[in-house]
Amino acid sequence: MVKNDPFANATKQVNDACDVLGIKDKGIREYLAMPNRILRVKIPVTMDNGKIRVFTGFRSQHNNDRGPYKGGIRYFNPEGGVEYMEREVMALSSWMTWKCAIVDVPLGGGKGGIYVNPKTEKLSENELERLTRGFAYKISEVIGPEKDIPAPDVYTTGKEMTQIMDTFSKLNGNKYSPGVITGKPISMGGSLARNVATGLGAAYTVREAAKAIKLNLKGAKVVLQGFGNASTFAGEYLEKMGAKVIAVSDSKGSISIPKGAKVSKIIEHKQKKGSVVGFPGSKKISTEELLTTKCDVLVPGALENQITAKIANKLQCKIIAEAANGPTLPEADPIIYKKKILVIPDILANSGGVCISYLEWVQNNMGYYWTFDEVANKMEKNITKGFKDAYALSKKHKIDMRKATMVLAVERVLEAFDQKGIWP
Ligand code: NAD
Image (cartoon, rainbow, N blue to C red; front, side, top):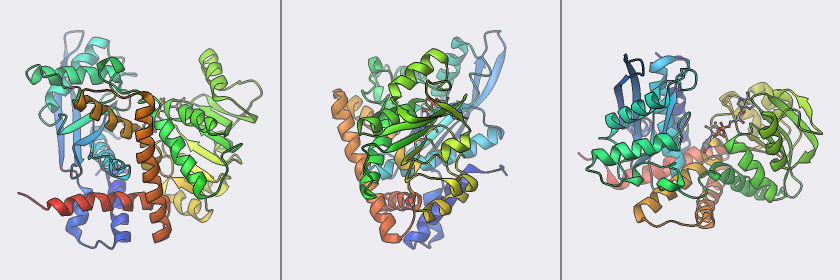
């Protein structure tokens, strides 16, 4: 048994949604929870010193009732080891199924990766390429533009995606196959707006949440935890909607900027000094002080497990937009709900990323490419509708938004499953 099994959490969320929907049938619950397939592969690599090293890789394909599997490939070595990683990718593939269903893109859920930490293990560029191409070869039979479309994730970038696409294309008789993978550089068939997608999508969901609770975003105070891709773009787009960033953090510390500051100025400072800490007019604060700052919108956009029960009791915000994956512990959810803080759960708040990945795949399949605004507008429609549908369900069933998004997603997957039935 794996400790703190993430797949057990994913299964519990499915069962909770089934409880709300009155689905008692154990078979249907199991069908929804279990991945369709988990591929575990051995990847032998000749290292630069001539020795062979064997890596372990995974691809979990959770559900494809609504369309091809979709989800990232991470290079990581979680503390629990290889067995833990297998359970982790199973859980992550399940969350991808629900994420795609919420924003109503016709894709299913997948996730994969290799048990390796390219940063701490200092693999050379050549070793990494051999590893990536070896993995692509081993999973090549189960991926493809109509089967399963991976994307970048922890410690993988457009570079690895290009190598996977190239390996796949060559294995398939040199058939140019950009649609086998997303998150590609623009020159390799990537999509405009993909770089800002997660933050922009989070900002759209905040705009809808603000409307729902009648909060005026003009002058609304925003706190960002983390200052990377997801959180900086969320901050910049919220700023364009009239809000003001009053506290931020990164791995070196947290700061409060009582008068507020332009995100672009904080970025400039971080680029020069290597951290947000020391920003002119700011005061250094603790992580707890950052998260519990009195504000309108809190965007946890960095790490998992940040909002504990203790923090939840002290929160002073009106909206939480979970740009990061899993920032809130289950123990905190009932406390936050009781405090009437509106949570936009991760599978909705950060779904702008997968939404634009979907649009990248569509453009690859068409061989025709849209402008930034065309892509962003399409994503806006999907994510806005996802928020509205989930919010309506939360009111209807008197449940929090985390449960409501799962109920919505499970309903949509079941609708497809009901049409197809079981065969063979
Ligand atoms: P990133 O690497 O660009 O940024 C991470 C930020 O977190 C950095 O600023 C880093 O300094 C900060 N950080 C690290 N440790 C910290 C700490 N202890 N306290 C405060 N800040 C700390 O990563 P990202 O792509 O922005 O991803 C952030 C989160 O968003 C992750 O949970 C990721 O899974 C999720 N997410 C990202 C995307 C995407 O498209 N980028 C999509 C979906 C979900």
